[in-house]
Image (cartoon, rainbow, N blue to C red; front, side, top):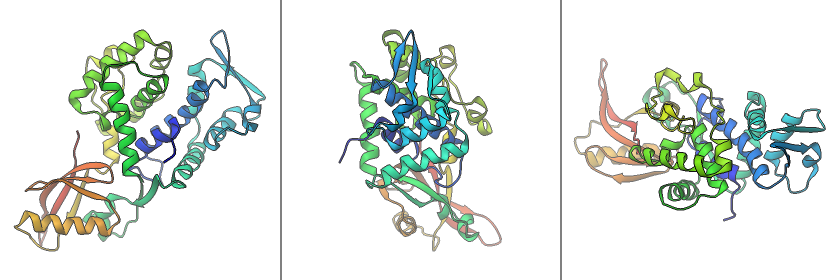
Length: 329
């Protein structure tokens, strides 16, 4: 399997399980970060001319044979009709992340096509399509699913680098910042690990010139992070610029928080109930692994963990089934 670029690897993490057709809040944040990643790739590759903290780039870069299509897509919207542009690193990042929804959608198509072409990303029916009320309303929804092996490789790679002692590369520093700004940190780090991640942020801020520049750049919008009051900051994280964003919880609200799947019968046997639900999920095209059986099984569905809680929807006739609830590591 070929090595992915920084932006492609981040796309595998950030777009997994997000709506592939509509511009949701979580996807907009991910796409802003993907656009910023394209600029940071060029920066790390030495494509800019640096003069007194100013980074200069000529439009001629768009004609270079080694420029990637998604990098070109981001740059052409920044340049517009300009021949040359210059600004410090945060200026370039803010320009890339401030693309219109229409242009972000173009970037999305280019970078997702590059991953679909090598079978690392696909579009599948949204998990909510299995929900009783969505299914009976005949609502069709689609979402991205990252290749399971590559998703694990990307997430475990950054986990091991951050949680183990040792020097982080500039690319690792960029990945950490991208995860912070897209609110994906708590998707790959457990709650009890986030304090260690904060320590890592502060260490890097003190020791790395790149981290000092990058960690103070904020491209997320506070109005978005407060979606339905689903944002909870730890008080100590608010005290430092580098910690802001570590404890985001809100994107989970757009990643199928609670899905009710009705079963063919009121099963008293947990094993039979689970088998019925697994069949339904697999019939809809979802990849499911049972991590823990029992009365309340733990399932891995399309790279995301869920608890399968026995439940019933009460009405004139009770409907029995299970409710999938997002399980936070």
